Image (tube, rainbow, N blue to C red; front, side, top):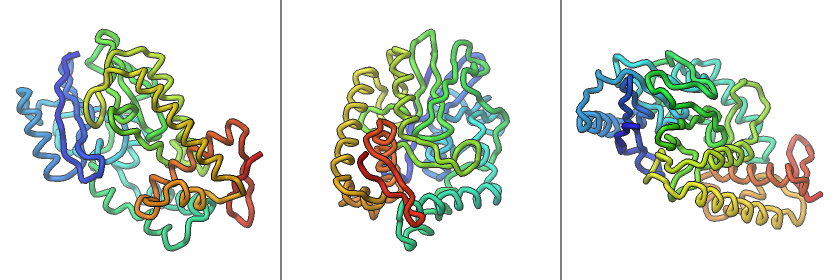
Length: 313
């Protein structure tokens, strides 16, 4: 796979994001950074260093819908835009979808006993929306699809970190363009998000993420071109380490449940120093560990006055 890496700055704590320019029968870029001036300049510079201009790009392929990956679709006037159908909602930003998204979070934050003063602040996504592109997708990608112009490059649906997440497996080089599924120094957060079906059934993102990691492990690839940081070559070793660490963290959650608690109470103990400043991330992690323990039959959840209470079985 003829691949050129472009490093793009982001306004997020995770730092730079990676885009990958792949020249085959079509000139394709995978991910495009957030919609900021700094990101645009880095994107343009990286493409020119590879010998091309923005207008030469024929396809933009998005690993998932998060704005640090899906911002600058607007920069490519001649390109088709490909991604999961879910991504299209964020490109169009229709009021019906935004209100549905807000009601989904209001519903679940109340179930998790999040104080009212945090809820509206949590769902305010005006800053996030400003980093997205505005061009709707021209083609939807489905699990197992071959990417046009790149024979042998297959899309594999890997939800968890995002409900729209794909990795792209190149059989010839036995490598993967991995988005945020596996990164060298950072374990991606399986974020709580509305489902792709746009109903009110919460996806169990952490369990999805664990399954996606195992799917990647079973591919036995030699390299992952990661969405942030360096390429990953110790793929299976790193996956095993991450899964083991999550098991230990889930055990910590089980110990916290020496008596029944709400999600918010567990979060405030598990992430005492950061949960107020990173409520979305820490709630998502806590819910993930609770989902795992409940899936293993070690704990149960019960509704009490419209609040979920977790306890040991």
